[in-house]
Image (cartoon, rainbow, N blue to C red; front, side, top):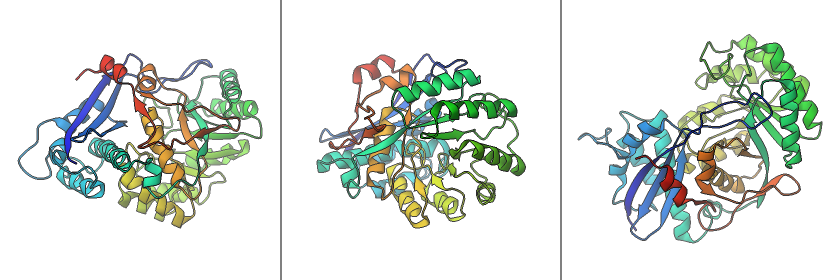
Length: 390
């Protein structure tokens, strides 16, 4: 079997990332979305999404290569290769893009391609990705609703009650207006905890800009980060997430050693080498590789091994389309210990329309993990054709 196509597909939507003023749902990145399709001469196809600067990613995957190794496009490196040689191809892509890549947009494109190759490998074996990776340890997992902070305590309460009525046993509020007013921050968290009650999990993602996501500003100091963890503990927060600059490993380790609240992070860490440092230096209680950013399934499975050795939990970051949810669920199925899957309830019409999946909550707030060949998620080709711009 040989790779015949590596296609970046650029989709355009009409919604911007935004937090909601009232209790209505927030919106994820609904303006641009990149998909990657890898095709083979035997008809097997892998699909994946990538959360990145989508227009730039198209050139990295299928633009113009240069003559020297290290400056090649990813498609040129892959055409004609055997898609089953996933680990070898990861190394080839990493070295072949080394002078413009290694992290950032190039790594996010590499991640999507790696995911596609693992999907093809599972389809070729006639089994789900989880079984290919070593076997299913579970067939369902508790989902947490992942959304943005609302602007008022009243809106927070109404939104939280809505997630309870839908059956969620856990909710994560992130970013939005959080960080603009310390007094309001506490009121918003207090309102969420009151509405969720004592038996449901409340998770908080403050973002690593203290003035919110709209305007980049100075990072939190150590004193501010410690103080944030201290008062969040008053509301029985299950974890505080990604609230320190992602490259400040020393800062994470310092705050984690003093925090009364578990620390979760890792969505912006990439390559196994950086995860080795991040986990080895004691930065987190919950590691959160994002399979569309970290290096794909090839890296995430190695991170799972590191997490098991360190005695920490792994909960993938998966705030994107159902494709990313599908890959994350397959990884979760293989873990010795698993807590949650992140469920993006803030999907825009663009991210929601790309893939079809029946991720419905059961009575306990869990979602089933597909066991069909590949990842158990199908793309909507008509929707993709209607929104494609390249």
